[in-house]
Image (cartoon, rainbow, N blue to C red):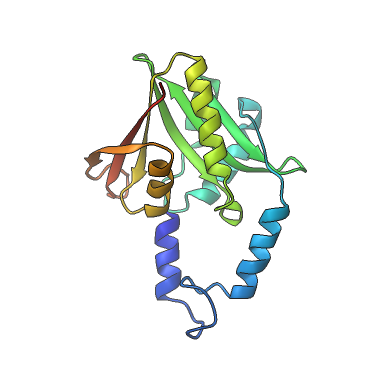
Length: 189
């Protein structure tokens, strides 16, 4: 989703060549964003049904192309006794990221969704949340984690590979808009 947005911005950028990065973002804006990110402290906390509405609203921002979960799906996931879920918050308590995992009957940990607010991406938040959910899975006897990712989401795939996940299968037309997915797994032992 974010990849498509970046591609669109690259193709339809109104800035002149040399005024910004590959996505039309001026260097001064990138520098200010990086400086702000270096100063922002993020805490990883449990995500429960008490944060349902805030999580659902953030999901709508993270997945803008129709792939966001419904409020009912989040309610189901967050009230499940098999849920292993966390949120990233700023010092003022604002949720800027979430991860939801489910321990499946075969003791596989399924990371069902992971989102970070667009303005807080590329600051290590997803990596920290993944580590936290993997620890939660291990405490519940999970030996393998799995997730699905869009085949065009190269940034997310690179992060997952860096963290030990491997692509095991292509999932044709996995997403509701017809996009392909990739199944990735990681041993937690």
